Length: 128
Image (cartoon, rainbow, N blue to C red; front, top):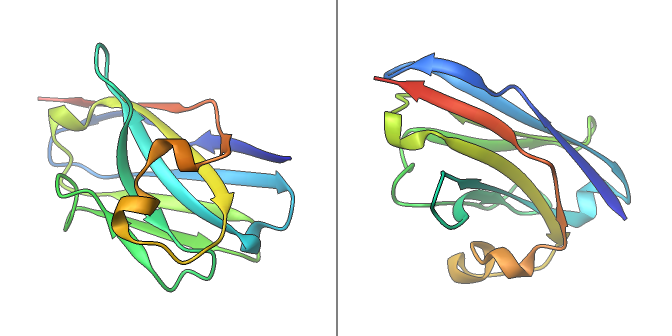
């Protein structure tokens, strides 16, 4: 089992920045690929970003590319999502997720059902 706990969400004005974190415990963190997903009210959960177990590969949804950065610190068992130039449409609950590490395409890394473990989520609200 892997336990995931997100933090760092909040209210920010459009154009602002926010960093959310996901602390993990349980199995060896460095064995897992990590992803960030989000879900807005009335919408399906969607992929935001992912990072491979080693940190050597990152993947981004087109909607956040150039604005968001995913990173991980395997010494702290934590994955981060730095969000810049935030827009009101970024408002959502942000979830981190983990799956056993393996090489994969963007399609593989961005698929919700491939992730085995999920956090409870943290709310990010961007005001206009």
